[in-house]
Amino acid sequence: MSRSLRTLLSLTASALTLGACVVGPNYKTPPAPAPASKAFVSPVGPAAVADQPPPDWWRLYNDPAIDPLVQEALTHNKSLEVAAANLAEARGALTLARAPLFPTNTVSAGAQYGVTSDSLFASELEHAKTPGPGWFYSLGLDASYEVDLFGRVRRGIQAAKADVQAQAAAVDAARISVAGETTRAYLNACAYTQELTVAQQSLDVASQTYEITVRQARDGAGSDLDVARAREAVERVRATLPGFDANRRIALFQLAVLTGQPPENISQAADACKTPPQLTTLLPVGDLDSLFRRRPDVRQAERQLAGNVARIGVATADLFPTISIGASAGLGATTPSKLFQASSATYGIGPLLNWTFPNTLVAQGQIKEAKAVAAASYANFQGVVLQALQDVESALTTYDDEIKRNEALVRVHDQSGVAFKLAQTQYNLGRIGYLDLLTAQNDLIGAGADLAASDQALASDQVTLFKALGGGWEQAPAVSAPPAADWTRVKG
Image 1 (tube, rainbow, N blue to C red):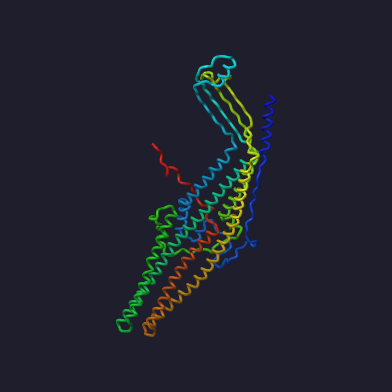
Image 2 (tube, rainbow, N blue to C red):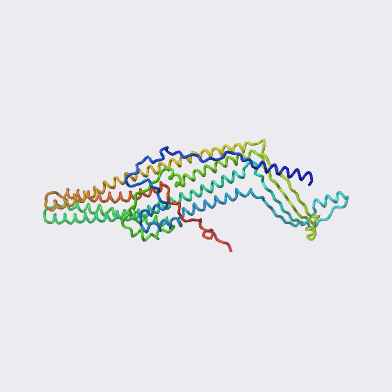
């Protein structure tokens, strides 16, 4: 073995040994800024338990229409397809980050007409006349490999992996939103139908009172003012019907779009629903540790932090030199028949050193920038954790208060019904005036409307709490971006 070749191999081995060094900080998952008690501040209340919520929490309603709608949305929702495309983009970036781990190869072939520098040099040495132009044929193979001396490539791969994991968490977060909003839209459609039914019942009550008032006025026991008031009460209730029907149809349109359908393709099951389904069990809320494991936004923020910490190492590696090992081989001749003769072969191998020293201001600026981005990511991670806690605490408080309000409204509605029946009896006996009857009627109508609205709010609060708890993505079906054939056109 020649001395030059031994020297080259020694330098190459030294470079590969140095490649074990990785600059930049090593990432460690930071602790979540959670309370030491590991318990929720808000009271769980009599309608909830500390059991872990199931991944498919919407099945707790035991309504056969909900699960197919949620599964349809988790498969065909357009927001999920956007999230899937972003995940595919991150995976493509990871492939690019891994590319420097492998040699770069270039194959070339050419044919040129003219005078080569080699022939000119040979003619000068031989004091011969200048050669005439002719054809020259060549084949070549170039290969280069960057020795990852200070971990620039490896840190880049770490960052790209973290980006993929963050985008995967973003997909899961989108799944939670889609599952929750699909369930909410179905419950709203049912609840608005119930409110419409209650309003129609209230209209029947007001109409009956109006008919009684008209008879009383005809018999001389009432006045035209009483008739006008009764008519006003009828029309006031009638004016509420279009709003409830509009809200019901809007919920049906939203449900269709959530499942990837145009608004006109409303769900027949949701359209036929009359009352919102009730939970068949107490609402399970789990604990803080399980909350952070379920919340994909917490996982996404932590992975974003990990990726940005790795990018500090990428920027730091630019302070140091890079070495590439290059090799080339080629064939060159004036005729194709001589191209593959031994005398036409050329080859070469050796390292190439690149270093921006002593001008490192660019690298130092990039390091400062990367550290600032990582610091912002750390603050964002802490903020996301605190926001998750706030979401659950707020949802628990709102749900608990609405349960108490709903129970009180049930009692109000029952007593209003009793009071109205008594008022009707006493009015027919002439013991009270029409104003007292109208007051009792309006109280009953208002109590019915308040109770129906509370039922709708209670169902919506349940969904809000389930979304805050973070379930719904664990067993979701796979979703992918729409194929290119759907939005590209091949030119003929």
